[in-house]
Image: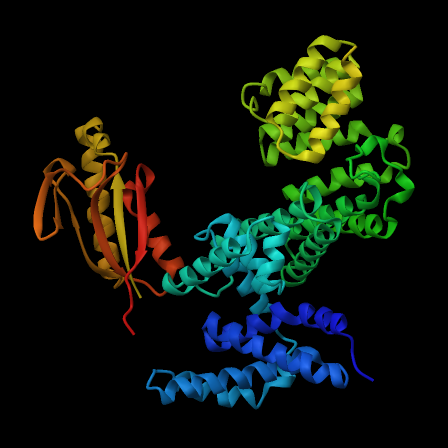
Length: 410
Length: 116
């Protein structure tokens, strides 16, 4: 019969992070765990393609990798390195593998917290999470972030070396640290998502995959931290944003703004799941920033036509968000909502308050330009769009700004 | 696992502080040192004289070059260090955050190399 390569790859991906996490936990050595898992993957491709994928691929991978790791430890012991203790523990454990192969969640969470440790550089946190937890190869991560492969490889090697040398622990942080560390982890997931959702480079396929990875990692986190409203909120937010994927870019790859999108293209299954999760998140943690952002996205999703958008409710949600997480960018978004609810002049007067703080942010000028255009003030609108264009480095957004500029140039 | 906690602060700050404030910082250090001694983390540590007293030595082609001052001019200067024993980086970072001048300067946490 035989199994297709792509099918094996999909299954392997699905279990990579969980198996690696358990191996790291057992052997306390990231390099050893990665090498052993790599060997197990090679064996899987060989054996499965000739036969069938086993009933429990995760247990199969774990058992195989564990044997490889034990072999390696034995070799090291023969070479006189100090691994006896580990070896003894491992040979005991190897016999009792398959049953506990699914109680792996905790290990996953540990590995994620290690990858997203604040002692690592943010770009390395993102790369490590994709590599160790989502099972992406260095080449794939490099392609997704438009970085040369050697650069990405170097970034990963350096981060892994630091984990070992500085002894960054494989632990779920203590209670006092849990909230900020979870926030950091979620931020990494959202960065991965946004790279897929908003970046102007990379093929649509690669970018859609990044969004998928971010969503499935967020699912894992919500499964492991079921009481954390912010995690559930982030999952909801990503689902709601991703529901617009098919509608937000036209045939030429240009961005289509929310109010001009063909809403029948929105993915209703994602919207339903995202909206239900938003409610659950807000019930658990009414002040969780991601939950509030998800609620805003849910209000948009509930409007079958742009004119039906409940802008007053959105303004109220932004008020709430500003309270829990004050930031000029949130204030800018609130100004847009106010303009939609009460007219462009009301929005413009709010923008004045944050103009200095966000002087270098292209979206401030783009928003100001749009509101000025709506207020009929074409000359200052033109100036604002030009400022925005000069500050923007995203090609897709630049094209959109040029279109806007054309509408106010006579 | 041992970590070296390098204490950096703008030396000017010490001069700007009133006597009472400096006394408070000093007291804070005494208290912190005592606490990590009791908890078993302390391996060593000292305060350093200001960088104005530093001398840098380089040997090039067998010749010793001696210059006045630190090896590099920085906004914050190394003013002291602790050598601690901690179970992992998280514990070391937590201890570093308790150093009194972490609030006004910076603490660089460096793992001590382990020779296998």
